[in-house]
Amino acid sequence: MKILAIRGLNLASLEGEFAIDFRSEPLRSAGLFAITGNTGAGKTTILDAMCLALYKRLPRLENVKHEVKVETSGKTTVSENDVRTILRRGKHKGYAEVDFLAVDGNEYRIRWSVSRTNSSPTGNLTAATHDLTNLTTDEHRKLSADESKNELPRLIGLEYEQFTRAVLLAQGKFSNLSDICDATGLSRAAVSRIM
Image (tube, rainbow, N blue to C red; front, side, top):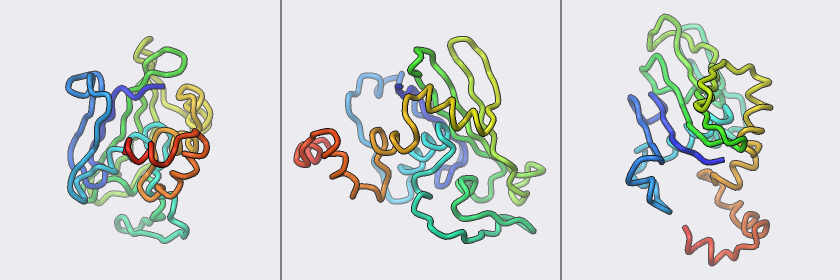
């Protein structure tokens, strides 16, 4: 599996649309690159968008142990570990989208999206949707919860837990680095030089 592009709209600290296309310069020819910026600039949100689109999960919410209810508008509340809370405050819709080359050789676009009722920034959060488009065959379909859980890891080649250990080491998970070093045979010094 290879990530080809990451896009999003109104996610956490990133207002409006954003797009990162790894098929275009300068990223196309960059071997290694860094995502840098000030605190709150949206670095983690870019990585969250990738996980959200692919797995409907957010690494930043994995450590939320309790079910605190957060008022979103009027009569509705959601848990603080509900991935829909990534929708930027004051916005009525958002999405996370990833283009990727799957293990079956086809290119796909996966989109997780959420909105508020009545297209209002104060409306109730709706159920999130998960859409998959095969860019090679131009086939598009909405995924059921079972399809999201079972088919996507097959196309990606990794379960969520494997992805967040092998591809994306989320913020707050750097203590797991020694496990990765042990599993891959890399020395901690070699990994430190890479980072």
